[in-house]
Length: 203
Image (cartoon, rainbow, N blue to C red):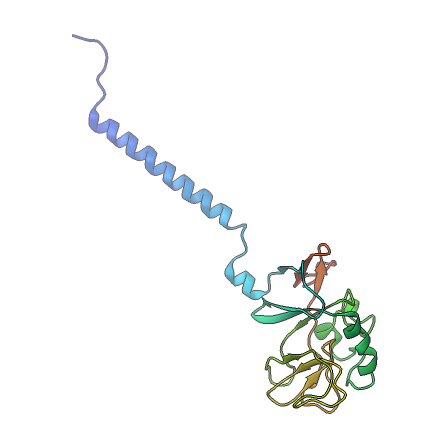
């Protein structure tokens, strides 16, 4: 008769099952822990910054992204578009973006009439300050329906006819009370833009 102890097959099965269950629980716990480092959908909706690739955008081209559930326009302005802002300075209601600056226009976007960090790019929330409609792009200058004959290019809100120049500044005597909002933003590089956070860390 052998002196070696025989392992009970039932006990062996129980040990294997327990180890396997423990491994599954451990993996699930680790997965849950890792997921806590990812921004939740709720956090994104509340305003998590959005990174945008602007490589390859051509002058006159506009890209729309979503931030805080709102459309944000990135318009690459041509030199002619930037030059047109001098013409519209005298025609807009708030040329220096002095109304509600903390809400509508960060300090670094109030340095000149471009309302931007880089004159070449306009970054603005595409929602009219009147009733929340989304204006249409009307970049071509000149006479056209629902626009003045000396139109220099900009945006037209189809709801009640408010017009904005190529810096998102509302023209005088229009229903919209304020300029389009410029969200806080910064450039990571010449081709990467972050919306919803600036270099001071402010959102």
